[in-house]
Structures are given as structure tokens and as C-alpha cells.
Length: 224
Image 1 (cartoon, rainbow, N blue to C red):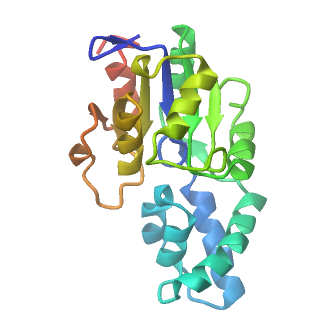
Image 2 (tube, rainbow, N blue to C red):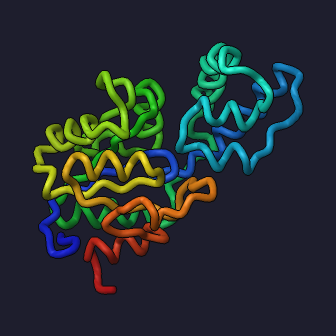
């Protein structure tokens, strides 16, 4: 494969908002938490829009008006509720299955670098049938640092047995692009993800893809 005339041996992806539309299960967990606390139902769109920014951001949107100490107290329960039904409604985004199948067919590898903790990322990949297929999974608790630090992406390259300069990182958050660029990878902004009103064209990615199907074409896996 080639992207911008550079040979590509592997494609690494962010997880939530890039490979998987996990918002329905996360929103459902937030709804259950609000009911437990006797709080008003959360603004579904507000929570969905910040899924890629993590659990604390979702709590701030779902339970506005609390202080940071309270959000820290509530985070374990929110994640516990999410873990209980982690893949009931979550699905790969349209075109993702075809994309990773095409990557595999070309003899390249693919993997996941996510800030999601491993105890949540691993079962999600397992439920989707991706555990044995992915060449690397680096979760948010694998190292002492997380994205936007480049170390997790470099670790994934090591696990996949590829050089960073022959790899692409795809993500739907500015931190993804910052981490990928710092690690020396080509980067693609996933404009189909949870952008929360941000313009991915401003992130200085090498490419912006509106859909997984467009990314398929960008990677030259098939004729445009």
C-alpha cells in the first residue's frame, strides 16, 4: 500500500470514534448513572460529541454543574456501568470491516492505540472479533503516558514489527494527530468521528477522510 507515495506496512487506529461507534453504549451507561443519582436525563448529543475525549469529559456533559472531585468519584461507577454492556449497541463504523479486511488482504498489518483502559478495550475488541486479527493493541494504561504523547504509538509500531515511517495513524481527535505526527507517522483525521464541532482540517494531518470508504481510497486499496 502507499499513501502520499510512501510505502505503508501497517495502519494504526484510534478506537472510539474511529473504528467503533461506541457512543450508544456509553450514552446508555450515562443514562443509567443519571437515574441512579436521581438526576435529569443527559443531553445525548452533548455526551456523544465528547466520547473521544474520555470518561471525565462525558461526565461533565452528562452531569453538568458538579465539581471535579465529584466527577472523579463518579468515574469508576460510570465505567462499571459501561463495562457491563460494553458491546450491546456498539458497532464498527460503516466501511470499517471492509477497510481492515482490505488491509489484511494486501499483507499489511493494523492495530489499535487508544486512551481507553485495557480492561475496557480488550473485551470490546474481543466482542467485535478483532483480538486475533489486530497486530497490536496499546491501551491507555499500557504505559506511563497516553496520547498526545507519541510513546503509545511507537510501542504499537514495535509490537506490529513496523517502522514508524512506514505506518499511518488514523484518529478523530486532535490528540491523535499530534501523537501520530510526533511519532513520525503519516496521519489521517477521521472526520466521521466525534468531533464536538472541531474542524479536523485544522489539525495538520497529512489527510482528512470523510468516511472509512474515503480512507480506503486514500490508502490506495482500490481505485478511486
